[in-house]
Length: 312
Image 1: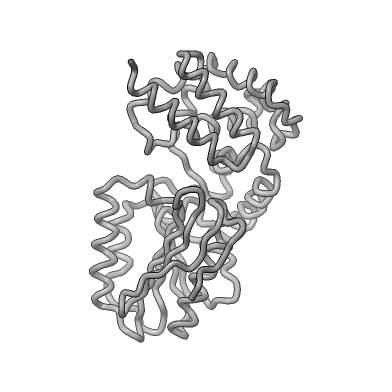
Image 2: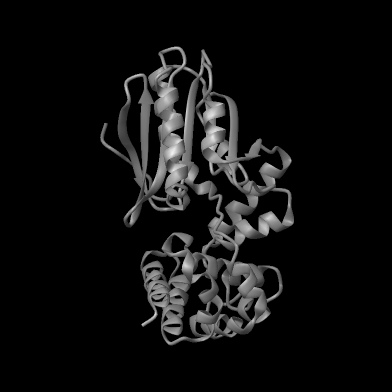
């Protein structure tokens, strides 16, 4: 028995069941069969299998192959991907993907961690930002953990924002072609609306970027929350980040928030907004200080689609 391979197979099968793109779902399912049989895709994934389920190897594999197709390095695969102008034919796409198992470029690309910056999630975050403004009657100071290219710090509608800043272990420049390619590669290969929306958001951000610091999340947040900021509500938020953080980083964020919450008052309130997976959907939660009340604001799809507000 090979426990690492069995785990990768299980992760691929699980990803095939939750992916909202039929073509990607089918490719994940067939990749699971190939890995289970010790096929070419297992040879690609085996060097990273020790990283465990938290490394999101199915997403790494799909992103790596998509990246090669978008970049012109896998034309046979690109011919069947709608995001590359292809026909979306599942059987041919699968054969082309499996053939990439012999390509050393895929092995290199799979080693890149998953990094996304989905502008559609703004729709699920906005109700929480609006709730903070209604509650405090103050403009917002936004601090995003895991901000990537900073796309979610932009275009906050119907809410006054006086400051915005983010941090990431690997911040991406929206004007850098390599960074754009990386983010685009993690969009599902049949979801053209998401692909086009991300293109447009990157173009806007390149023209007017938001500061995103290269920093450890816990240390950065502690520094940002030091002291009082009267006359504004400080909002710390993240989206689909928690699952990628090791336990030590989670504890550091919790400690920084706990320390700042003790200093919060009506003139300098603090809010914590989380958009994170919850089974087959995502949930947006909001905790506010003073007081510490924590409540669910909305449910939605993983990419911010089909937002449903929670009961007050």
